[in-house]
Image (cartoon, rainbow, N blue to C red; front, side, top):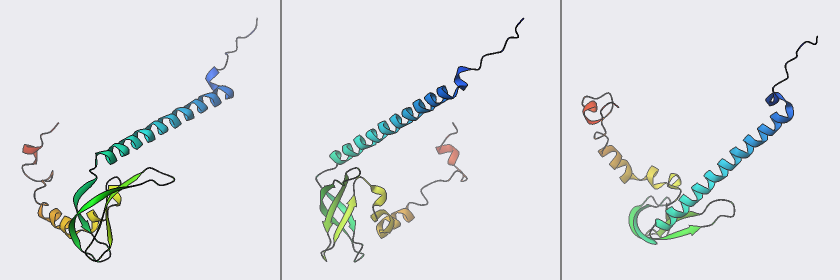
Length: 142
């Protein structure tokens, strides 16, 4: 009588492992591509929603002057990458100043502006912290 030998699992075969890895890679690439398309569509919608002309606050990086002005929306189409939209205006001394519409994290106005820093300091006390008394009245435990 012949002794029964169990057959190896088909998933453990190296050819099958390669197929599974290839399919997982394709799936992750497809997900990445779909996410990039979604981000691109959101960016284009953000550009289209921005007004062609708008009044905005500007900060001139060369002379340090803060001012308000009516700016024109401009769109830059880089060779490699998504479109970039911004408002552009000249200060009194003739320097070009920009405010980003799409890449807000690049906008130096939020970091260097004295008016923004003043507003942050003025409203600092209004933000109640979890350790302070009365936090549970405003924000109930979930």
